[in-house]
Image (cartoon, rainbow, N blue to C red; front, top):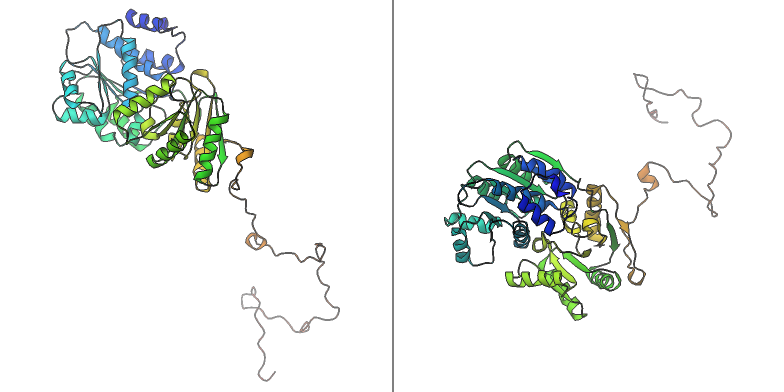
Length: 440
């Protein structure tokens, strides 16, 4: 029960109102040290309840200090506007019985309206690094009083090129502060550099290894001959699989638009989400998916990052993601909270090596699946046996029936030059060729 945590009574009331029963593993591990004021570096998969793991301790700290109203005291950084909007809703839900206020700063919204909101100095500011830097440079963003800094989905934030912006915003939080950093994967050198720069003596919590994905999610691959074949497979899966909501991932905006067009032509209720879409269209797509107005979302990684859609139980990789971490982020959206999910990756000849490298990275082997109605000619790389010559063996001679021929017998009688002594080199090791005498 959440009562085991020493949280403010108003926060516990909000938790009870939400009918949260048992805390998740990441909440059990992260909330107590966060309440103690420790810096944390937490690896936890998407959908594990990590937002509550940092929001509840953050709000508890702001409620505990009896001080007059001052500037913004908490900053939460996230990679995308969609994830920032979802986090704002969760902060407001947990803070519903308190006096704490939160504000949102992302791209795609009126800059002046955002500046006016910040002049009211909300207790918690939630935003994306790019737009926050713009306000920092314009003199609208004052972070000296920040007591808690949170970097959520930090690995993806750095993948999107926000490493420098994140460190700059952290440096602007110049007062004494607690920093909480969450990511779904261990990340690379860039993440380690940021951790060293923004965290002080952090407690490292690893709630899942990268290969420990949602247990309820089946992972399959289906081989395909080409993109047209892939499109046929997508339509078959959407027509024959049982699902409430589905996401189809592509690596490019052009592929997303093309696939979306084919779906609309076939009467499939779908929306497309990528970087070229404006904020209004993005909001509409997500709301329609959540409310059931559309069952399928076609999206690129950047646009769909951080989406938290209840009832999402089918993920199709039209294009194989370019890294193991990206694969984890994609399929981590299905099979949440103990539910079942299905992740299917479509593999052409050019995708096989990438797929194999992701299997090695995850230390898993994906289930191979064949759809009889759409079985293609490509079934994976052919196993090439080493030839006899390549292996260093001579090919045996066979007769017409295929049986190995016996070696030819040598004719009886003395060997040629058998009576002549063999010549050897001076060291007695290598035989020398006999030279013919002149006139022989």
